[in-house]
Figure (tube, rainbow, N blue to C red):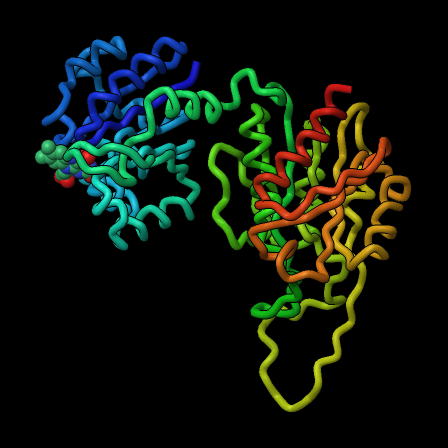
Length: 386
Ligand SMILES: Cc1cc2nc3c(=O)[nH]c(=O)nc-3n(C[C@H](O)[C@H](O)[C@H](O)COP(=O)(O)O)c2cc1C
């Protein structure tokens, strides 16, 4: 059973939220409806109280911070704008701010409202914060016109809720997955650092996909340039030493460790305590190797833990070097990224990888990182199951 907050706003599709409420309750979830005053012009609190087996006067506040999922269907242009700007002038928008779990929204409005640049910008703001949008779909709209703005069907929203709710019955349910993402920054002084171009997109996509498959996910995040995913535990780690410490503290509990972060191989030998003033003299840097986190994990890993290393290199020669990690570092899989290309790898939305395992190699053609993450987890699932 999961705790679900069901937001309903004042659109003509509000009546369809009754069907969504019914399905969520039938699936065994504890559903708390939150209707805006706009929604009450279309549907009644009594209907939702009855469908969710509550009393109209039930106090929502105890549920606000405990819910696993906030789903808002339909989502009006008005509440979409309020969410994007952090307004909290009714119980639904207050809940959205207080809520730490997953958020799924189903916008529904006429095509003009949806296409308006203000609405599009607001939708993009929500996406960038990790809110998932479902629809709107193209089709017949309330005023008799056709266009994009129709709410996704309740069955489709329900199915997505089920997937998001911890991937109940997902293939990785009951497994603990530890993922690292981003790029470390090794301080030179109090203002400057030696870093790399990793945005964290690949690791975030892996964390999201593992969560979708039902795993309990911890993400050790190094200076992410993208929003952290919802519904996973986030642990910040800025330097290679931080990654070593945070991963080391958690690895023994993990069934799968996915080391997608670009952890510095070298760090400045000396860190100045305050900012070095600018002058005309050169500043020669002495770099020393950092601890090899993967090698130390591999030495300490317990039976059955799946360890996946990510390696960046250039061309086929780079791939050949990374193949050796299978034996040199005794990992189960190596995911090779060619970083000589601009259109994939570092800080790009797409990736193209070679997944190297003991049983063979698989080339994953250029695809969005979410798709690549799914392919990598397919391989991991085979190993977990085998
Ligand atoms: C008959 C009718 C239908 C409406 N349908 C929609 C709709 O589908 N989508 C939408 O964004 N607004 C729609 N509106 C406008 C909203 O009800 C209005 O913006 C309201 O302030 C929304 O409040 P809420 O977001 O707090 O629920 C409709 C208004 C009326 C009178």
